[in-house]
Length: 365
Image (cartoon, rainbow, N blue to C red; front, side):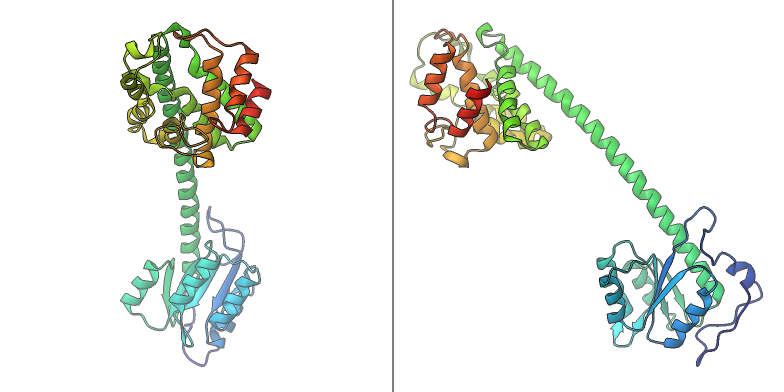
């Protein structure tokens, strides 16, 4: 760029020094080294001469330069949908502080980068500007080369920010993938543990997997969100894990349980939650495990919850669990045929089970 001295009423912009031609050369659209040049610049200053000077400086550069003489005009440009890559902003614009305007503009367009301009070379002011989000700080009077240097610096910062975001996104993706792998391993281990529990009584072997199958059919029919389905599958596989702490004399007893034995058995949902609670990623599955023995009429356990106060996943597991229990041999009775099982589950629809889920299960099972 040819060295110029711009006409001013005051010495806000100094003539370019002898090396300015070399330093000003990057002041063009198309790139500085490997970084991407900003294509749109906004200059906000209450001195019209400053705005005219910037226009002249960038007239041959290929930049699209807009100007605003006050805070209101700058915000109106953003509100109208104007988008800028870089904003040169005076620290004092009439009665408005440039730092305050910078934060308003950043809130309106988080992708903006700012260079603060001031006639006051106070170090504290520069530090405050940088702390509040400015990328660079220049003082009046300034050389053309100062503007070029500032643009190049912001360009490099913008490119580094982009690379940092990409790196963080890559790291987050890898961490998420690894976390999901570990979660899958833990769930598999716990599901195997639940299956080992079922081998204590061969008649219950595969029960949790079958409950999970019925629960998944219901979830698909309800078009549950993928995350809800995920935790429903975990909860249905692990809903009886608390029975690990229940004696075989209770679980395998062929006769009816007495009061004390029944009270002991009723603690298995809470025991299951106690076992799984240290695994924090399973937290969304715990309410379904805890409440899968609540009854629709409010007479179940452990919370006596009623109707839709019972978590949906718990209501799904309740009807799936009951259906598989009725259709399987147990120490205290033989499996019910399909018609008999349907008769029982319809009898208790709206009493023990959510009627809508009963209808879905019978159609799909």
